[in-house]
Image (tube, rainbow over all chains, first blue to last red):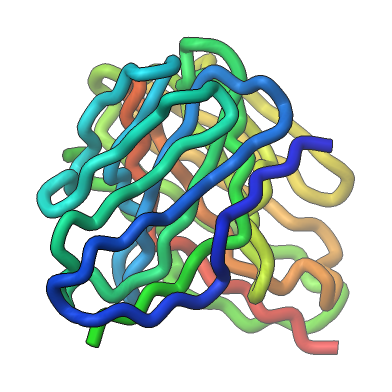
Length: 115
Length: 110
């Protein structure tokens, strides 16, 4: 079974802090994704990575950066957390480069609150 | 950004009823359409990945159809069970970008 794990289920940070959200997958998948989920909105893609050290911006990359130094790990970084980044963050992975054609496997999510 | 619409927003059905939901999306630059089920306190789980116009997929009591020319997909659940209660998300894809709808929340009443 594919397993995608995220470092924390719940996280509370203060405005201005640098925040790291970690995601690890154990199935040697090429692609990894970071989404955020807000009430009344669909999952929105923040960043996508199709290989180590490779990344592409999604719909809402502002205020975020990512790091993929190893194939199994994809980190989302909030450089200076703000209250409008309070959200549920979901990581996902999928095999092979053509992400369109392969189902994504999601982690359990991290509910981040920025105060 | 792709405009993805799912309807209805929420649905309550009795156990044993059959039901269906709609996902509408712009038909240009279409690569594939994904359906996911998201139960409360769990991770979204893939149901189907559909690519061809006229595709029909089935998994147990759940099936889906795809019309890429007119830009819609239907998800059907036959004989709904309480364990089918979840939010059902569709996500059309235009390459490496996924655009998720807001989902249809299904509650099956025993």
